[in-house]
Length: 301
View (cartoon, rainbow, N blue to C red):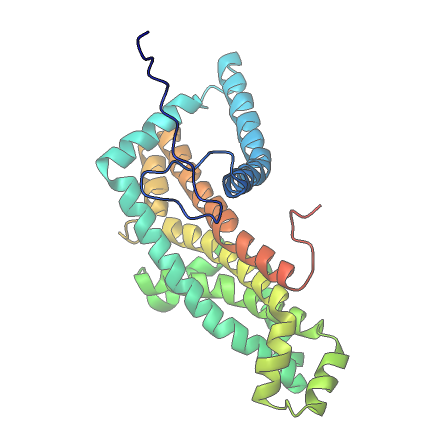
């Protein structure tokens, strides 16, 4: 009777978890199941966070397309025309270059605003006699639209790069300072007294007591300062009449050419940068800070 070759079975892994050369680890091991479970949980969490934004985007795009098809607005282009302009601008290199230049300016202005606003908030919290005259001025500047700040900056510095940075500073510093001051005011006095009893006074109290206790509010202040600075930068690039490459120049070029689709394409890029920075940078940082303190994040249920 001829011998029948039996199917070759994979070599089993050792019971202690070590695998011999050539051995095949079964897919059903506890470690593999745990890894798959963690991967599926991460995917579900990411989908839960992205779905509200994606659904809102789809709703806006659908309503936009409906308005265009019904002819309710004779000048409104189709979403496909805006996407085509975005693709053309990316292929030509103007979109990528404009994004880099605008982001670089906003990052520099935001860093300077944080470097001024956070210490200024600490200073106003520490010295009450400075807070009385300075806090109302900060509130007034915070309520001013960026379009009002642009002529002031241009008259002081001319239509230059410095005028753009001045508009960003004037738009972001009051917001950061006010937010930091509010966060410091909300620190429980008991923590300050406990730190003082343990020897934390002066700079040590600020470093080890005040700033750690107010960190969630400081992060929220920086988040708001970025939003104010980004909006102020777009206004400054539009209104200063400087030949600076950026998204604001793209919007102005579309306006001068009378092409609404080009203007909307640049506006979509501006909106996308704001959403990505909020969702990809400040959102995770704020959730991590809140979770470290046992507080629910903005997406916590």
